[in-house]
Image (cartoon, rainbow, N blue to C red):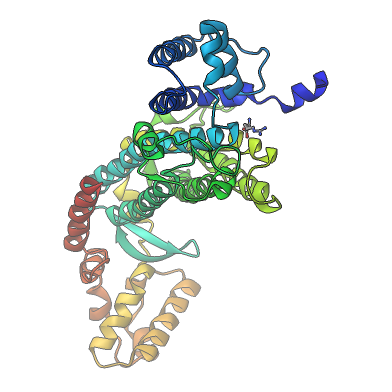
Length: 447
Ligand code: ARG
């Protein structure tokens, strides 16, 4: 092989991440080969001890960085031979790097999902604490980034919780997809040895084994779904970040980000920049890009294994690391968030957010909703033209707009009454939001 080709094809610089998985796989395979008499007990013991030594060297950072191997699988094979001699030569009986890499990768995904599930529930817990602390704070809700109706800030925190709850369900689905053992498929046609695949699955922590060797070596659906899940989750974190960036800006000032999650400017002394949130939003692009790359990778591949699949790793590792760090950071940041109820309420002082409630009050007086809507919208237009709040409209103007409108009706409106009225399931009333928090807490415990 040309030196350039060897360099071009080498993947050890990144797939050495899979060393723990590859060692575990080889230990289980040695046991399987011993069970069918290919390895003697002594040979198996020698192999396992050798693999353990490679593992210790790997953990302490003493593993070689490059050498005569192309990837993590040949690294293990070659190093084991150096350590224990000829017994190592028997270990690759009946397996291929094709079923090996597919197995390692599934083990990696399962391991990461376990860690990510903890990080995700951590973020969900932070949201519940935030909701609990702000259960009385009234905030404007927005559609089209224009003020719509008053809501409790806790209700917004619970909206974020709902997004992450879906991500937690999605995580379970990806886990389920990855939880299938390809080992025993060999290169493509299946192994010619009577190894006990069910035992292998148990040893490596899988609950199912693959049923078609051709598919098993070429299937990367679990990788793609991991990416799709990660991209969806990051899109959620990115939208949450965008909200928090806007609301903590000088113009809004509804919330304060914890200073330890912000950075100053090298030039402007007054700045406290929301860099962590901006980076979460920015890193979302990387994760979305990785997801697209993973799909593009398999699009034109013939069925079963092709070397293209070596390119599935860096993006997978990058997404796993990025999602984990973003979840941890946003959890911490949410924990230190302060909401300034005075400013969020002051921002609604014109009272337009109560327009729907006024229309509803007219409905109560027997006005059909469409007409009520027209009257209140005329009233708001008058307010904008005359730079007045809803409660400052003179009686005469009200009478002119609608005979059913009067100041008493308008004066009766309040932010508190508005949120209290929305007590149907999923609404923003304090009692309903408290119920949602209790429900969410139960969900989180259920896991
Ligand atoms: N490094 C390869 C990968 O990551 C391992 C499998 C190589 N198989 C082969 N037949 N060349 O996909």
